[in-house]
Image (cartoon, rainbow, N blue to C red; front, side, top):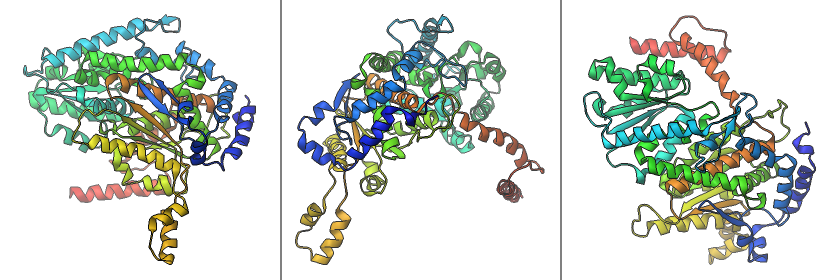
Length: 548
């Protein structure tokens, strides 16, 4: 296999970066009044302004050459056609089938998966309607008022984020809760204000053996049994998102209320599947269908648009540009919408679990940087926390700014103030402040102080940003946004030669934890390094002292 860094496009981009590096975006904007028109596009309800990037007219064609030389178009076709592009697990990658509302057959292993997808979606809809209407009742005959999702990873982060983002669409009589951490505090604090008679648990685990999830589920089961004293109560207060009917039945949940999904759905892509059941219950089947439709809109754009006007492709290539040619190590996601406050958290898993790898899909060590560290928070909170680093720090940190033009909660002029900051920060990051501008601001300050303060108030600018703007955060526009980032991550994985759909790096810690779990309550200690052995001993001492 040809190393990525030996491709002609890579070498051309390396040379091009040297030419672009001394250029300042302030001058690029001054020289081109149409820069926004030339470096922006719209898709699936979203406007992407990528004009505030360190690019010239030559940059995108060179990046597109790189995409062509790695066969990006072929990889996109292979994913949508159901080929087993997850080669280490020998699986197709078909989360796009979960939101395929266009009637197109989607085949893998010679079978159309769409009848099964539609069947599960219809069952989810009937169940959600029953809970919402009160047709589904708890063991004592009470209506459900609280739904608790028990899962971890993609079975938690995705639906939690979507639930928060679509809170304006929740049924007012239903409250949604999420428990993920195996720390008992998470479960205890969640259950403390709830009534077992009106609480429904959705246990989300593909195998129904996930350590954290099943530990929390077992504790929740005990809570329900203590309230009712009847095993029959479990079936009225627990449903399952799983593929293992045997394990679900062993738990005591009715297999008739098990909602299946498939091995071609990765955890971090599973919110579109039965894992989205709590979300559907909260917002209703019609709004959930709109959520799927928005993702489908972006899928169709990704499949059909030419690469030079393809939003996921352009975002992905810009990320490669900064990661590999400017040495950027992280990427900030900055949503100016309180409902989107958990978006960076979800994207951390999506991006870092997908592309945080140092081995190509063929098993070779990479000779280039791969996935960045993804981070961020909502709105102006970040401005008063870490924007200092983005503006004046020594590291280049590309950032995505995301906002709706219209708020679900207009209070006086607060949304206008929010949008003013949303627009001002990318402009400031692009423009910066020159020493002369800083000195002029200081006016009559004495010369020694002026020199000192001018140096502190000067910052270089030329910091790249993307701006994503939408009219309003709705189920449909949210679905499109999340699909946009999914495809962006896939594009980057293709460029870097990675399998973006496995996550072997997390397995060793899980294996070691299984052994250590036994050692924490025993007297013997396994063969560990001196540090781990000492820490196990100290934990035993603390626990023994606490029990006395």
